[in-house]
Amino acid sequence: MESVTFEEINSLFRGEKTGSFTFKGKKTGCVLIHGFTGTPWTLEELGAFLVQRNILVSIPLLPGHGTKPSDLIGISWKEWVEVCRLEVEKMQRRCDEVFLIGLSMGGTIALLLATEIVCNGVITLSAPVTLSSFVVKLLPFLHFFIRYWKKKPFSFPSSPPSQIGYDRYPLEAVLEFIKLLDYVRNLLVEVNCPVLVIHGKDDREINSLNAELIYNSISSTDKQKIILDSSHHIITKSADKEMVEKEVFKFIRSHSAILK
Image 1 (cartoon, helix red, strand yellow):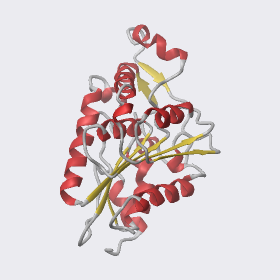
Image 2 (cartoon, helix red, strand yellow):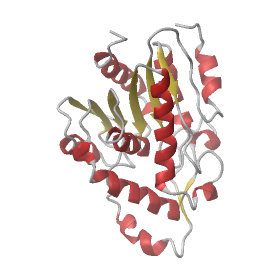
Image 3 (cartoon, rainbow, N blue to C red):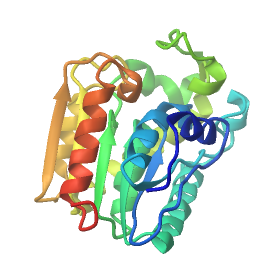
Image 4 (cartoon, one colour):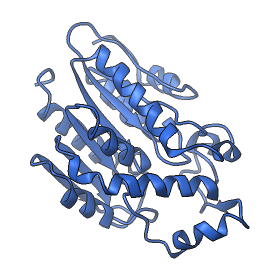
């Protein structure tokens, strides 16, 4: 493996649309996909962890993200998926095996792509396929009167909000998010590659029942589900992040012909 420091990996991911390191010989690649209104920051530590284990990593920035909340307005959910699809195809040209890892909405997108593209496995982290909030049912009417919904304060005050993501949800964009969830929920039965589902038991944003729904709906015979004793949604930055990293790599290695 090329010699890289954690600081070098961090500096690569921070502020960049994508980040990757190249290795000689056969390669295992991972495309990491961040969540709705988030940024690659949420996945940079997991990405660095994988890079240090001889895995090629890419973390695309989704359209309308990483700038200002108003830039999400007018973006279709299909544009988020297309950017990720192109990133996976690019990774496939560079690697002999490719895994998809998605946090929150990124996990939803990873599941969708698994129905279209041959991959070695999918890992979802705090991924939704449905939203249970009563407010969601009112969105088709609310968005005509309210443009933004303020988020709860960030759980990671040591990092500036510009790295974490937006501090509010553009309601028009939330409707696109819901369209994506509706579409993917009906496609889950078409997912048949190896899948690892990880979710926090007391996730404050996405109910862990989503993990059950994903696990029970996919057609994969090789599937695992891990429910953490966590209330954080961004589990890659929580107290459980080391366990998440360990389980992610364990799954990849067990399904890799290169890393064994």
